Amino acid sequence: MTITVKFFSLIREAVDTEQLTLEMSDRLSTVEALKNELSLRGEIWKEALSHPNLIQAINQRVVFQEEGIKDGDEVAFFPPMTGG
Image (cartoon, one colour):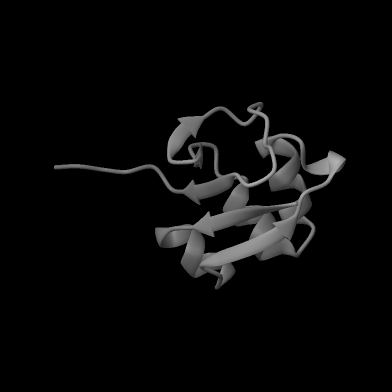
């Protein structure tokens, strides 16, 4: 049982990672739990994932960090988009 985690734009650049495949576990039951787990990889990860306007999506649908994660999901993190 796995999930795919993708990072975009400034988040991808900060953590120097485009995509991860992680084993699904009970401790990774929400987006918030996933962010906490990834933040343990170091200060750069913690800083990149703690941005107050960070956008997170599950299966290409923007969600709140309390959203549940299940086997096979794709979770994505990206900074707020700007337009002009």
